[in-house]
Image (cartoon, rainbow, N blue to C red; front, side, top):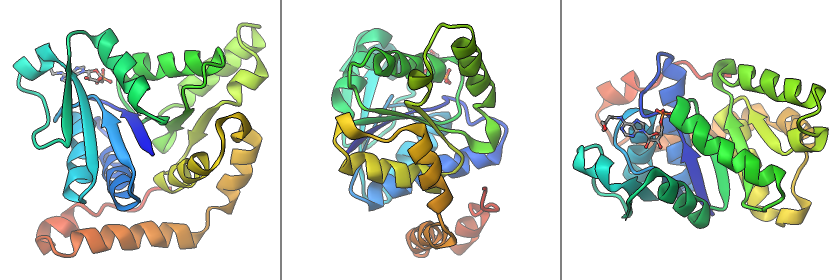
Length: 232
Ligand SMILES: C/C(=C\CNc1ncnc2c1ncn2[C@@H]1O[C@H](COP(=O)(O)O)[C@@H](O)[C@H]1O)CO
């Protein structure tokens, strides 16, 4: 599956964000998926893509020419698709991807995932829309969406199609399930809540083992330094 990930061009101030980008990148590679992303080497985008590549996965960048000229494109991508405008980039990423994930980020991330939310709401069947809500980063957006529903701007059914997950473990379970489920029969938020409850210590241990196996051949000092406390 081609997984589009939108995230900050800055790393943010919470180390859990980079840890999540790293874990998601490794998971994408180890599980034979491909990353579709904005193509930059900076911030969380850089952490994510470099970990996909380092773990032997495929990463497709879609980068406007002016960012390449500014020197922020990631090196050694599987393919760098060069476009002229930000609008072209968004359209190309939608064309290439089967599922869409927003990690923490700034207004660029919000703009990109908002287009996906809008497509999902209009029933355009672009693919499922996930938010990685690390340490409650997206809680204000959840609140805003509920406010929109209460004020009659969106329907409860719309809300249920935007999936907010609290950890990489929960997200990857849902991505696995999205891959196996025909678009028309994909999960509602209630079903995903049930699935979240099922996420066991075993799946966390599995991810930890994958990460440990990946880092084992590397320098022990920076492998250790990169292992922050697991987040939940
Ligand atoms: C290259 C310049 C400044 C460095 N800033 C960025 N570099 C690369 N990509 C960026 C930059 N700023 C925004 N983006 C794009 O927006 C999305 C994420 O943005 P967010 O606002 O950080 O969430 C992502 O698609 C980036 O491509 C000087 O021109």
